[in-house]
Image 1 (cartoon, helix red, strand yellow):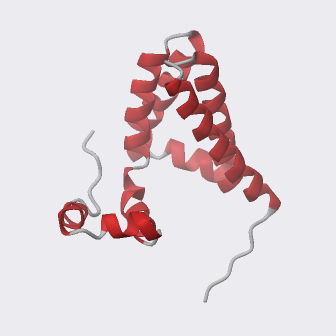
Image 2 (image 1 turned 135 degrees about the vertical axis):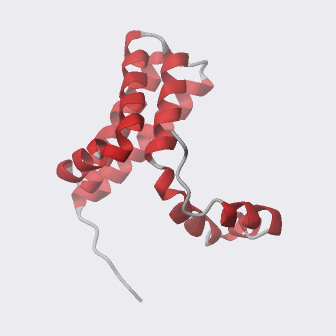
Length: 140
């Protein structure tokens, strides 16, 4: 069995990322509250930076294939900060999907190992859809 050590910096980064997602969801629930959405964005970006490191974060966002997603995500972040949360969240969602589209197969394997969600994702209609989309990037 493979074991890995998690540093305190990575633990704090994962916590900040989790709080960022939590505040973003809370901001959406409270009718696109720009304060909660902005706080969620800041926590999410700082959490990702602490988790994978500043250099890796910059390399990820500056990859040529991720350029449209990066621009969309940060323009959406800007719109949330200046007070246009609905347009900002639409742009951020598009940017998030484009940026992290390469991670969906890994995420589906992880979800299949969670007790209740794993059973749901192993059903034939969902499994055939996941297998059909394996390794495909979102067209941009």
